[in-house]
Image (cartoon, rainbow, N blue to C red; front, side, top):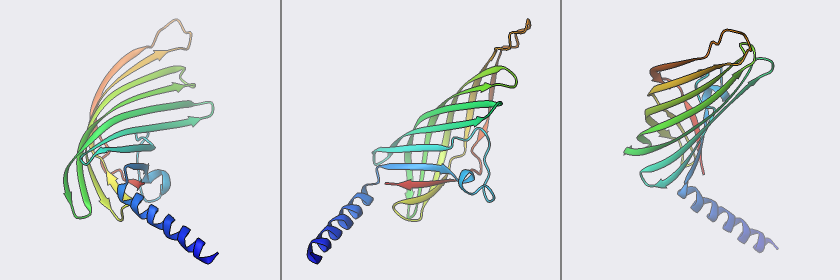
Length: 179
């Protein structure tokens, strides 16, 4: 009986170690969402990002955003993207890439709906504590078009379009778990 348990434990451990070396998937969480006293971010930050390794130097990405405040607003966002590794040094990896963001906000208080479309080129710096855990930051630049639809049934239509640009993600930290 002990021998069978030992064989199963060795098999599980070896498959875990072999699988840990592959690490084709990564989940990133905002440090602000986990430890808000030490880190900061803003309402434009995506809460969760999934990265999938498709080659040694290329990752596909998909970010999710969700915010709900009863009787105020709901915000849902999706951010597909791609990044490319350009430098690897010891425990550091540096990448560049671009994301596209699609965000819908329904503001109950102002009776408006917001549709945001953005392109976000960025640089990524990632420090690995182990094969499975790292921290990263992704400063970048955004170009955003916001369509505002007035749905308050008043005689004056306050619908509008706004084009904006700026810096994004500066100083924001993400915790990454690779598997």
